[in-house]
Length: 331
Image 1 (cartoon, one colour):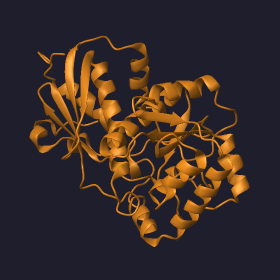
Image 2: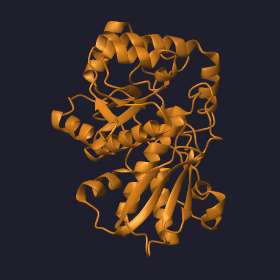
Image 3: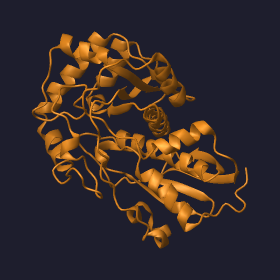
């Protein structure tokens, strides 16, 4: 693959930035930046964006960067260019995308790219109607790659017991609740720019609809929660390993599945906070007979109500200092 003549214009860089900015992230923290170097684009993980209680090891932050990487790759292909991606193993660069020669975008990739601006985090109960088996199969096929599997969970009664336990623990964790409040109190519905989760995007329902556990989140008994889980479509993103490269790959796979759901007029949200409790992931593997390390739980279905977009940081803040010439870009 060659990068000859692949230097990007300001307009093309803006297109890439807008796609990356719409990726989902933990608490809508948007922990990424771009560094454009001729025909190469570095996706930088902002380690200064940290959630010490929710995400003490930074795993969700890296998953978020993986989702942004999927958007970046799709945007490059939307420019009519091929690309090659190298995942980084250290420092702050999460991945480097090298722009390749001209290549018409495939119809499937175009559908996912167009879904980027329509994708929302849906923290409400889903509407009636089962997700067709073909749609579920398409999500799995879109997300699975070497070392990453999307698994339909079995033993929902055991999953319900574990999630119910996690809800009770997180409700009483004062440090967790303070941190969550900091990432919601400053963000209001209808805000165009900024970070954090808008208050009206949260749900007062119990898990799995709640998504983020707050002090008042109700805890249904295990049988009720198991029935609610059975009424939804669920996928658990599992990886063969548990290093940074696997976290990036899991986030990228999750985003491909999520965009596939969006393209099929489905809505979704992600549960990760229980997976940070000590021993929780090991119990999931054991109780649900999972084939790898669980990184996220994805729930999806038919939306019952509209979901507004979350605010986004100004595009100028998306660029590392070496590309500050592009700072004036706006969404």
